[in-house]
Amino acid sequence: MTTRIRIDQDSAVPPYEQVRGQLAGMISDGRLAVGTRLPAVRQLATDLGLAVNTVARAYRELEGAGLVQTRGRHGTVVAPGRDDATDRLHRAAAGYAAEAHRLGVPPDRALALVRAALAAAP
Image (cartoon, rainbow, N blue to C red; front, side, top):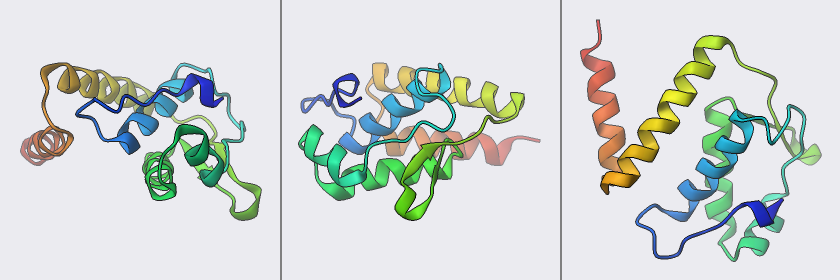
């Protein structure tokens, strides 16, 4: 699986976000099916040449988004399907993230814009 994840060291996007985004994309388009076990944090970090905390953060972000579940000693697996509204929002968020990256907007600024939009929503 690690051959599918590529880290661009010259990118303005932090490595944890590159890992998170690529795994989220693989989950959303079905390349990683429900129940698929992800590599252990330490193993993936070693394979990608990253710090363990970098990969751990990516996994935490994926878990917070409901895309994966951590089962202690049994590892991290792709979570069961979400409802249609969540799927549509995930696709919209992925598109937004790609556009923000294309425009060179830093992740913190892009998130601030989303938070402002959510706060202003009826």
